[in-house]
Length: 228
Length: 357
Image (tube, rainbow over all chains, first blue to last red; front, side, top):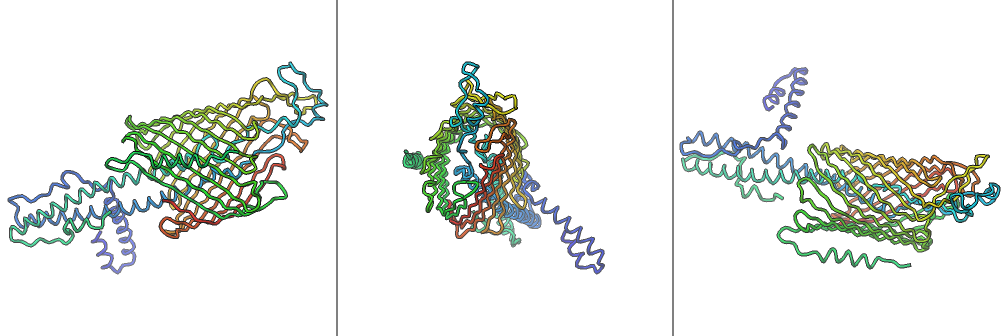
C-alpha cells in the first residue's frame, strides 16, 4: 500500500493516478479488514517470539522489529475496539431512550378511550321486534342502558405482547458490547505478553552490547497508563 | 378511593436497600430514570367536539434493580410511577403505580427459564377510569447457533376496571417467539400468541329481524373470546436505529359484535444528530376490522364497529450535562370509528427535563 502511495505521488499521468488511487483504496480496505478482530490471527506463533541463547545481534534486532510490528497492530486493534464500543454505547443510549419512551406511553395509555354509553338496540326497536321470550336459550332482551360496549380494553401499544422489537434490539447491542469488551480484555493480555517479550529482547540486545531500537514499543507500564 | 403509592414506594425501597451485600464483584445493578414535563393538552377529555384544553405537569419515574442472587439466578425488580397534575381539569389528575418482578435461571447451558409478574394500579381523581391490572408470566428460552433464539411462554392476566364490570376480564395465553440476530445491528423475529379471554358478563346473540335489523339478546353463557396473534419485527442500526413491527390480532367471540381483526403497525426511529442531540419518532397505527354489524348508540345506524386508532410521538433530547437532558415532545392521538361520536384528535406539546442515574 505504501508503494502504491509512492507511485501515485511519482506519476504525472492523470489516468494512471486515478487507476492507482482505486488500487490504493482497495488495498486500504483490505488492510482495514485485516486489522479487524476476525482477521488478526493471534495464535501460538504470534506470541512465541523469544530471545534464544544462540541468537545473534541481528537476529535479536529482527525479532524486536517483528514484535514491535505486532504490538503496533494489537494497539491499533484495541483502539478500534474502543471506538466500536463507544459507537455501540451511543446506539444503546438511543435504544434505551426509545424503550423508555415506549414504556412511558404504555404506562399512561393517554390515547385509550373507555367508551361511555351503550351499544345496542334502542327501546323502540326492541319493542318493534317483539323481543324473544325467556327460556329460548337466554334471558330477556336487555334494556338499552344495561348493555355497554364491553371488553374493548386493548392497549394500542401493547396488544397481546410487549414492545418486543425494542427489547430485542437493545439485547443485541448489549451482547455485542459484552463481546467486544471480552475481546478487548483478551487483547490487553496479548499486549502485555508482547510488551514483556519486547522487554526481554531489549535486555538481551543490551547484554550483547547493542542498542535496542524501535520506538513503537514503549515500556509496558507506561503503555497501560490511561487505559480504561 | 385507596391510593397505594406509599406501599409501592416502601416495597421498592426494601427491594433496593434490603438486598444482601455483594461478595467479590457487585451482583447488583441499579438504574433509574426520572422525567418531569410541562405540557399542553388540547383535548383533555378526548371528545369529538367542544374540546377542552389545559396545562399539566407530567412526572415519570422508573427504577430498576438487577440482582444476581447466584451466578445463574437473577432477580429483576422495577418500580414505575406516573403522575399527571392538571392546572384546571383536576378531575383528570392521574396517579399510576406499577411494580414488576422477574426471576430467571440460566442453570442449563444456553437456556433460561423463569417467571415474572407485573402489577399496575391506575387512579384518576374522578375515579371514572381507575383500574388494576395483574400479569403473571412463565417463560423458557434457548439460544441456538447463528444468532437464533426461541422462547415459549404462558401468561395469566387479570384486568379489574373500578367503576364498571363491563371492562373486566381475565385471560390465559400461550405463545412462542423466534428471533434471529444477523449481527448487533440487525435482527428480526416472529411470534404467535393464543389467548383465551373471559368476561364476567353474558354474551349476546343476534336475532335478525325480517328486515335484517340487528337485535341483540343476552344468552346464558358468559362472554368468551379466543384470539390468535401473529406478528413480526425487524430492527436495524445503520445511520439510524429503526424498528418496525406488524401484528395481526384475530379475535373470535361467542358474543355478537366482537369478532374482529386488528392490524397494528409499529415504527420506531432514533437518530443521534450530534453527540448531545438525539431525535426519536414513534408511531402506532391500529386498524380494527369488525365482521359483524352492530347498532351504534345514539346514531341509529347499523354499521361495522371498525376503528382506526393512531398515535405519533416525536421527541428531541438535548444533553445539558452528563446525566441531564432537556426534552421537547409532540404527541398526537387520533381515532376514526365507524361512528363519528367516538372520534377524537388529541395533541400534546411538552417541554421538560429528564435524568438517569
